Length: 361
Ligand code: PMV
Image (cartoon, rainbow, N blue to C red; front, side, top):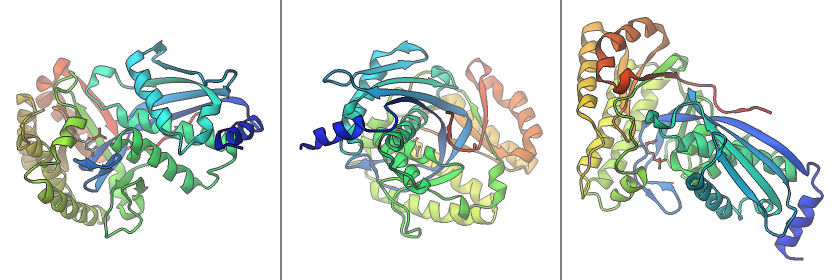
């Protein structure tokens, strides 16, 4: 019996021959940035992030045992067939044969939608790939009875999400997670992210992230191209050393709610990411003049108010304003009075640390 025949008879005997699985999974914002990769989506340096609450993808996978020789795939985004997205997703599914051999035996209808508009300047790959990976792991549970242990389930979901989009592997856990080899924590791995909340002071469960939309357009240079430029980057080695040092410092700061050290490291990481783009060959910049104006205003406001507030940046011009729930009123006044004028269409997404992905059915 070939492996395929084995899986075919196995799936034919599965308890649930059809069903629907729905997961909601968040986007995440990195405080220590992943930049540069090798092999199959493995990170050159460790990164740390927290999952958001309001910016998420909801994905449903409807499955049934295939009726014809070749299994059928349908993908809809926001209720409409989307050829470009579908091509990417179907290729991803084909590449997962080794990890989910039963996939060839089922017809799949995948529906996906985001809680945030496509044009909001928020990367949707982390939320969409983690939502799909969680659905596929639930499908494995339903068809094969495997992945019974919660830790195995999330580890595999993180591993699969990573294959779709590196930073997506950090979205499967609630709160804070680390991805990438890091000798100080032996459980850390390049293959998947781990939950790191036990190392973090409860103060940081109150983090807010207001995303100031400076420019909604899709970025001119993709993250994929940016990662590739790290290969021959003159500061590549220095970046790996810097990220580990910053991770040491951030974990120490977050274990005891040292907000001054937190601010210094988080802002240094954001600016280092963009400095690496500026010093790549060829160079490029994703910053907008308004981004720099906003960063200046944040520093001045922090100096005069003494409040805990800082920024981080993704690979784009939009500014993530990080502050604590307890200072929400003052910070929102600051946003309204000083920052909104620098945002495209005065747009801000008020987000905060979330409770992780949720299975909805
Ligand atoms: O996961 P990717 O390939 O989209 O890379 C994301 C890289 C950054 O968002 C810039 C940093 C990070 O760690 O999320």
